[in-house]
Length: 122
Image 1: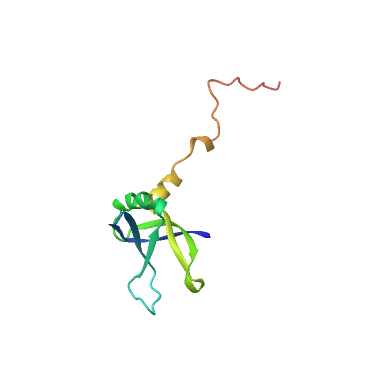
Image 2: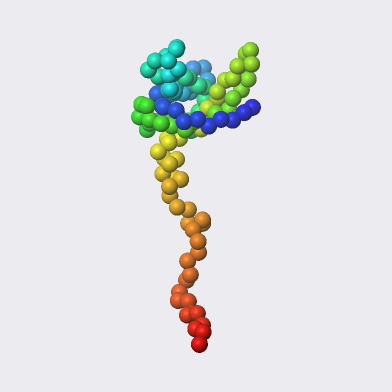
């Protein structure tokens, strides 16, 4: 199976529970193709069983049309078509803020205390 990460606009998440079965479906928007859709192209993707609660919680605070980063696994469907299975969702702004924050482990070490003055040539 192949993995893919895409940035799309969040539209909705839907949770269905019946007979001890839980399902979560993610609805996202993409750029319209101008042939079949004009306003926004709507995609729906099923969420992996292992990520149901995590993805639902990640979607709770999102605004409609907010950019999100979605990690998916692509499973082979019928007639060799791909089915996107959602593994992880995060807002793009949170990911950008995390990347902008300097990591103390990557900063050059600062000298501690006072350093002796270099020897002067006479």
